[in-house]
Length: 269
Image (cartoon, rainbow, N blue to C red; front, side, top):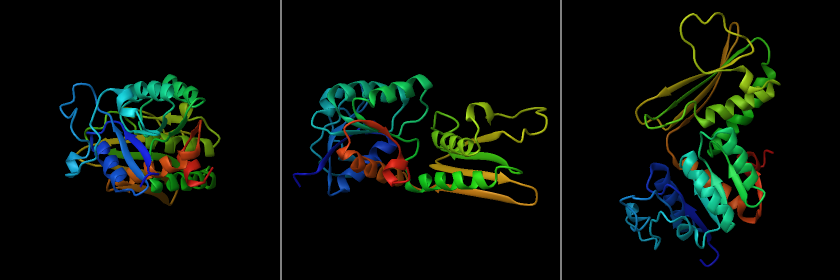
């Protein structure tokens, strides 16, 4: 197809990178146009789809301008320092970005927002359609149970995840706090140890689990007197994130600039 959407993938040799490449290769309306990896990667120069036993015609490179040449959008699920380096080059070249990276500082978030004045950027801590539906449910639940219920966010991920709480858990906390008219910075409790005293009823607690190959589990607990309500999302495959990223890329195809989220992609905003 001559009108296939040219998509580049960052972190192309990682678990998520492989899933993204597989999704792009399987999509009739998309084509892989670039594959970025870190400098010194042993895979540099190899075909990006070799792990699938396929020939994409795209060589893995650490040269950002080479890897982004001919691409309209970059999908990036890497780490903050890598994403910020990619952002600068994408801004220079006019390449849009789909960012699933988590763990950004406030300064980095401000830099992403500034770049969105020049290029279209979709920023979301979780691109699973199901997770974003859950965020809508949490908003509704928090408004209905704003009094008399203690709220805790529990998340579990694989042993290799480097940030905690997860970006998804923090997004859930932000949704909950906003629905309750609070600022998450003021009411979040990230650790409990020793004699902590009674629970502050206005707080939102977070608990983090790391182990094994857990892809991503998130539960929000509303604990009242005489009842508990739990809203849970469990990921069994990273393919949900990849399909959500492709859906976001399609949404961004006619956007020249601006900062978007999955609510925009799904029509919730």
